[in-house]
Image 1 (cartoon, rainbow, N blue to C red):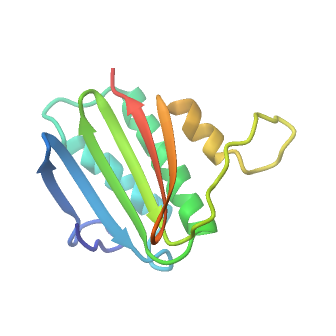
Image 2: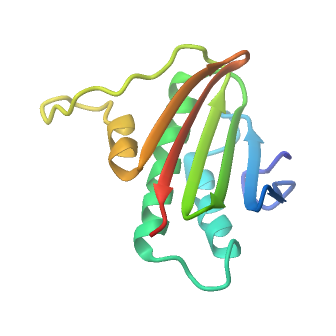
Length: 146
């Protein structure tokens, strides 16, 4: 929907589509930090309804955003697009990047060092959707709000 600066203040877009409030930002991984994405998610949650969300929802959303954006920056290519939407009792977190190689969910292995991001996202989400697109890939995690 729009570009956003590192402070998360400039140009991000929020709109209502199909009864959902959505925030989408596109950023260059070289100038945007993962912490900026987490702050945008918290701000989005704060602005998406009048009463605060339960801590569980805020923390799960922050962690899912953090893991998906980290993976896109670390393993992806080109600009990264983060989209957040709340509808029908679900928070959808979608991250797109220009890399066509799809991440795979590995079986739990407490002895493995690193590469647990998708495992964490799957544990916090009611479902996880990974798809190749003509310009790269899209990863969507849906977090139950109730």
